[in-house]
Image (spheres, rainbow, N blue to C red):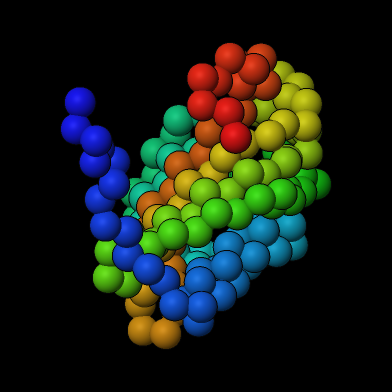
Length: 155
């Protein structure tokens, strides 16, 4: 096996870039908790993709906004989320990833299923656009606590 496997060059972010990315991530949390989906959508590129926690895939800022607005008027209208951990690293020139571990309040689905408070990982790909770092792709995944006990790579 190649000893250098997985040791590709990582783009280093400047402290200013990292702060700006973390500010975008903080705004994701803040706008969600205010249920301000217009401000939430302002954090997205026009061509943003979003894969939600149950696998729905929304393409383009307008659809991501429409979906979040609909859910925040219904099942998420009283639901908050809180980021417990955010890891940021550069991927390429003006492109970065933020992996966020979060807790989300429980809620009732449109079909009546009650979902308890949960933990998830939200991966955000951000692209520098002008002076701002905006989200161009997101994928949210529930953390299965039972499965996590068997993770062969524990930190």
